[in-house]
Length: 359
Image (cartoon, rainbow, N blue to C red; front, side, top):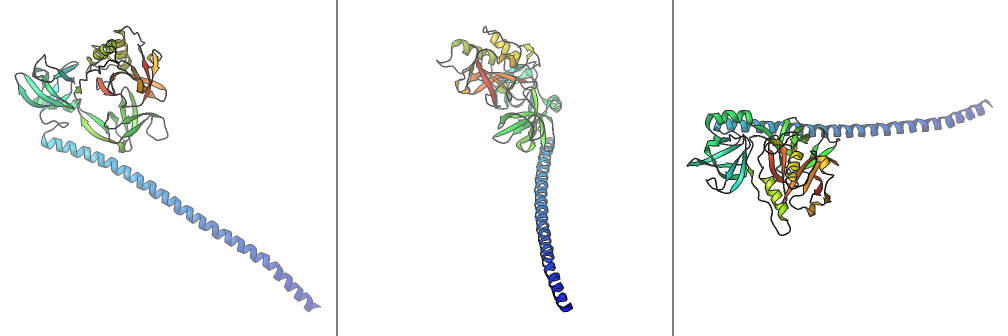
């Protein structure tokens, strides 16, 4: 009996041990599974950190390369005597702008405007006129309105600004230095933006009369002087009424004029809405001194319907902060900012919000 009991007891113990072993096996299996999972997650996290570190390193190196490149350019300029790319520098000594003419002579055709304190390369001199090149403009200016020599070089050191030139097809201008914030607008290739402050990853820039941020890898930095602006003739065709043609010609006659925030004087300085307000008033259209307010006048037209004399409004999202006059051929004239003053630009240099026809 005792032997039977012992046998039964041993069997029972064996039966009890089976689920215990199974339980231990399950626990071990789960432990191994979780360990493997943890290892995989750790490797993945390590991979992400490696990638993030590589991206950060690449961005840092790109920023440092830009700084080294800029420093190298400045060093090269100092060695070869050039300043902001000019070897025989001249600076415009005028209050507003200096007319650049096709040939030497007061009655010759105007091909550009050289703003006050703008730089130019002096190519030749004859009979009181300088043959110059500045930006995309070549022509002739009165020599007595151009500062040269050591005085021009000293002035250039004070006048030059760091500019960011867009090196990609389009780039976002953001409200803050990160990718999670509001996109103010989209700017196109080769657009020059005045730098407010340089950073390793983000550059604070001035776009017209407001500030924003652009990713450093999408712009090239350089020190520049103001340049001449091409003088563009208004587009004239049977579809454009004489009044609109005349309005555009009048607006273009102020290219090179001063930008003054809050200003409303075409001779002493205007801001963007002050400029459109005063030009339109000459043709019987009276608008408020506010780009936002002006967008409520006239009637809406699409960009495909634009005619010379129409107003184009820009800003962030649906918030309007800038206005310009369309002059035809895909271009606008506007009071841009304190550096450039009144100038001609590509109508789509930044994203338009709306367009209005006043008459």
